[in-house]
Amino acid sequence: MLHLAQDTDPGWFERIRDSLDTILVDHCHLEKRAASNALNLIFRYTGCEGIPRELSEVVREEMEHFTQVLDILDARGIEFTRLPPSPYATALQAELRKNEPGAFLDKLLMAGFIEARSCERFKILSQGLAEDEPELAAFYRELMIAEARHHLLYTNIARRFYSDSVVKARLKELAPAEVAALKAAGEVPRLHSW
Image (cartoon, rainbow, N blue to C red; front, side, top):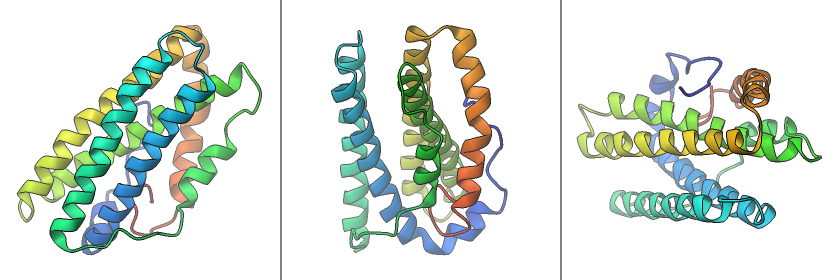
């Protein structure tokens, strides 16, 4: 369902476990960026049927998640600070075609890949934190469902504007690039790192 070419490295949770504060700050930034990306798609593709309404729901939900993570940071006494940008997003951007009609498809599919990877990571977090941090684990279980829904939304929008065969072919081409971007991020404590 998630179209990921490779599952998360089994050692990822153990590598980030002692850096949960950093993961939470990173997560907060990612929710903000996800809202910004959906909003940018609305601006760029306003005339495309359904885009403004469907993606405005994504913007609203991502900002709600952003606020929820801010609340978690506040409750834990963690300052919401800047982090060095992860190479993941930069590597993904490099894979996007610049010209239409391919650019629109690529933006939708990459947004879908990011949501899919986040869904997978939230599942891992919910399982890994279940014993020591049950409330945070429950929060990540809820977000996992939302991320799966967003992934499906982006891929379904793509299928509305492009043939199923074109979408499948491009998903197959981009999936290895998403894994390469993840590996390029290295083993730093981030939601989207190897």
